[in-house]
Image (cartoon, rainbow, N blue to C red; front, side, top):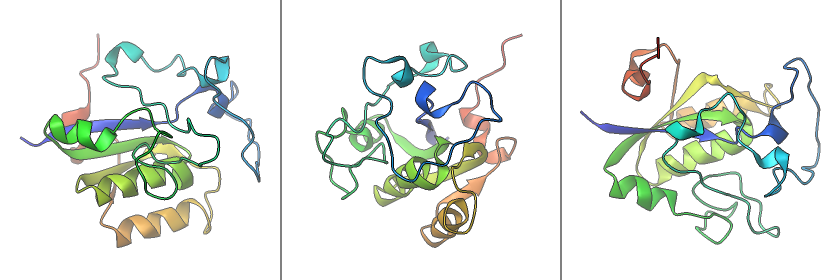
Length: 169
């Protein structure tokens, strides 16, 4: 059986409004998820006891960092707290599933960088939220996924069965 990893991207308070019907259009990224603030906390719906590793990204204010693997220029740098690619490879991971927000930014860049590093990548489409679901946003990301051999799958599809935790009853 191939070892898999689930990469949960940016599920922090600053990205998740308390009321799901709240939406905001943000043309320029304001300061967000600042270390030591409530906005940087993982949302309470995620049980952090089940997380193997939390990677802080965007630690260098001068470099935009959407991917959990590298900065906007594709460099592994101090903008990330950890070399995710090396960690996954060291642990025998061959397949990654990517979920989270924002689909056309951080999820997209994380999935594409995982593919560049040689992983088989699936984006779990119904576990992704985008800011722009239109042709210049999530639709463009989906096209790019197809071009780069990143598969779009569903959370109830057979591909994700080995990363699902048994439900506690």
